[in-house]
Image (tube, rainbow, N blue to C red; front, side, top):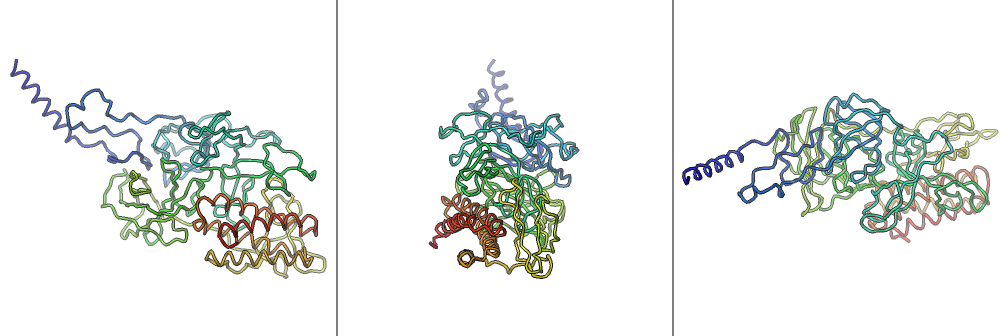
Length: 543
C-alpha cells in the first residue's frame, strides 16, 4: 500500500512539473495586465498557470472568473477593411458603456462584410472596450435616428452630473451609483461638430465654418434656450420672456466624441476616462495622443510607456522600446521613431498613467501611414440664393462695396453659419486673415484688442462693421480652448468651455443683429459677449 501511495505522489509531482512547461495558448501573455484593448484577438482568457503549491489546488476560488458578457447593439457608420475596424453608433450598454459612437476591432474578418447603415448585434466583455465579438446584422430602428415626426422630441434619459460619474446613462429616474445624487433628465441625440473646434454644433451633416472640414457625428444633450438669455435650459420648446421662441442648444456629453483628431486609431482605457489615439507618420514615427473623456488634450504628466513591434497575430517580435514625450503644444503625446519599419506595421503599446498604476496594453495595426484630416483651403464663396439651409449667403450692397453676411435664420444650427475671414471689396471672394499668435499671453492680448474694437464700433454706431471683430474674438477664444486648455487649472476647464460657448453664441448673434442694424438687439448681446470675455480673462488670470 505504501508503495502505491508513493507512486501516486510521484506521478502527481511529474504531472505538475509538465503542466508548468506547457506553452501558453496562441496569442499574448498578459500576466500582470488586468485589462487589454485588443486588436482583433479573442477575449477568451488564457488558461491560468498551474499553482506553485498543492494547497492552491483546492476548488478554483483563486482562479480569475471569466469576464462578464454583454449584448451590444448599434448602427454601422463606417467599415475600414484595411484596419479591420467598424465605426459604430452604439446604444447604451448598462454596466459596460454609455451610448456613443466609437471605432471597434472585430474578432473575425467576416464581421467586416457589414455596410454603413446596417443595424448590428454583437457580444462585448468587461475590461475590453475595443473589440466586438460575433457581430451579426439585425433588424430594427437605426441608433440615434431622428423621430419620424420632425416635431417629435427624443425620449428622456437620465444621467449623472457628478465628477467621475458622467458616463452613467439610465432609461428611468434613479440615483447615481457612487454619490447617491438624483439622476438628471436629458435628451440624447446625434449632432455634428467641427473636428478641431468643438464649440460649433448643428443637427445635420455639413461643413465646419472655421476650417471648412467635414463635420463629424457626436453624441450630445439637446435642450432649449433663449437667444437673449443663455442661462435658460429647458427640456421642451416654449416661449422666452421676450415673447420669442426658444431655440435648440446642444451640450457635449462625456464619451460623446470618439472621432480621431489626427487620422489615427482611437481607444478608451478601462478606467472610462483616459482615451488615446495611435498614429504612425513619416518618417516612421509612432505617436500616441492622450485625451480625457471629452476628447480634450490630456497632459502626460507621470505617464510612461513602451512600444513593441508585433506580428499579424499580435505576438511580440521585437524588444520593447521606451517612448518619450513629444513636442506638441498640448504636451499630450508620447512618441518614438522606429527606423526600418515597413508597412503594414503592427505595434503593442504598454502604458502606465501613473507610477503605481497597472500596465495597460493597446494594439495598433497600420496598413499605411496616418494622415491628418484635411481642411479645405480658403476659397471664393459664390453667392447663394437666400434661404439656402446652412449656407454662407453673401449680399452685395447696391452700388458695390463690401458685401455683408445674411443673418442665419435656420433654428437647427447652434448660432448659425458665419464668415471666418473678412470679405474683400472685389466680388464675393474671401481674403484670409493673418495667422493668430501662438502663445497664451499673445492670444489673450489679441482677445482684448478685438473686444475693444467691438466696443468702439458700437459707440461709433458703425453696426454693419461690428461683426468682424466679434467673430475674430470668437476665433481667438476657440484657439485658446483648442490649443491652450492645459494652461487652465483643471477645476476651471468646464468654466472655460462654458465661457467660450457663450462667447461663440453671442458673436454669431452680434453678426446677425449688426447686419440688420438693430442696435436695441445688439446691446444685450454685447453684454453677454463682454461677460464671456471677462470670464475667460479671469480664468487665465489676466483680469
